[in-house]
Length: 110
Image 1 (cartoon, helix red, strand yellow):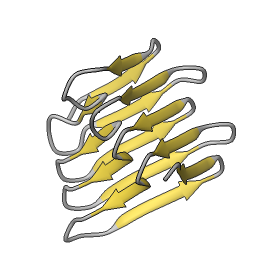
Image 2 (tube, one colour):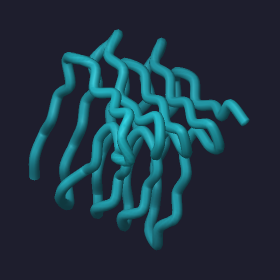
Image 3 (cartoon, one colour):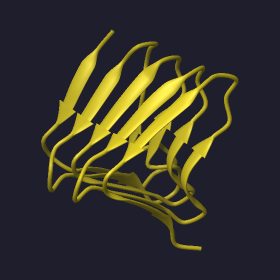
Image 4 (spheres, helix red, strand yellow):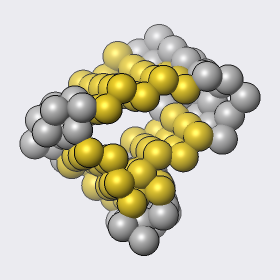
């Protein structure tokens, strides 16, 4: 289990995710004012089991803002935080449970 706190922007313009969870039970916290995203893929890929995202900043993806592919997962989108995707704000294509607590904004551009 790895706890990652992003305090600076992480926006990629290559065919990669802005952030890709590496292992089960990993957590990511995005601090206020920080942008995480990708101009070609989803902003964040939660591809492992039981990943948790706490967003106080901004997430953008050319596909989905956040895609959840792993078994189970949780997103906490706090007041003032944004998750935006060109096709979907959040996409969940897994075989478990997803918990989304939204006090900010989740939307799609398309």
